[in-house]
Amino acid sequence: MKFLSDILVASLLFFAFSLQGIDINRTNIEEISEQRTLSIIKPDATAKNITGSINARFEQAGLKIIAQKRICITQEQAGKFYAVHREKAFYDNICKYMSSGPIVVQVLQGINAVLKNREIMGATNPANAAIGTIRRDFGENIEHNAVHGSDSEENAAIEIAFFFSSLELID
View 1: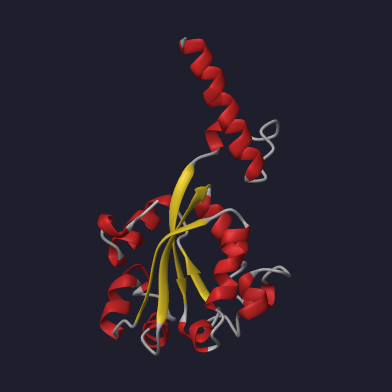
View 2 (view 1 turned 135 degrees about the vertical axis):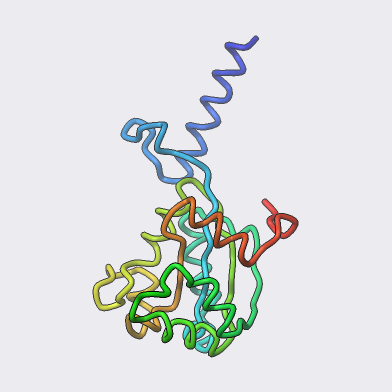
C-alpha cells in the first residue's frame, strides 16, 4: 500500500510541476520548493491604477496571492522595513518615496516563488530590465520601479511578518 501511495504522490507532483512549466526531467528535485515571498506594489504603480495588470502577471506565472492589503505607511515605518539599507545612499529617498502614497503589500506563494517573482519583476533599474518584465513595462526609473520583491526565502519570512500576521495568510 505504501508503494502505491508513493506512486500517487510522485504522479501528482509531476502533474503539478508540469502545470507550473517545470520540466521535471531537467530540474533537480531538491531545487523545487513551495515558497512564500513578499511583493509590494509601490506608490508610482498604485497612482497609475495598474495593480490589476501587475497582479495578473504574477497569477499568469503560477503564483498565488494568499494575502493582500492596500495601505499607507509612514516614513518611520518605511525606515524600519528598509533598515538593512540604512547605510546606503538611497535609504532616505526610498523611505520618503514609500511613504508618499498608497502601496499594496501582498504575499505570493508558489514553486520557487522568490526566484519566480524576481524574474517577473525584472532588474531594479527599468532601463536594464528584460522586455516583458514588470519593471521594464511599468517602472519609471531606478527608484520608481513599480514593485518590490524579497531577495531570499529568509528575507521573505522577515518581510512577510513585518506586514502580516499568520492569521492573514490564507492558502
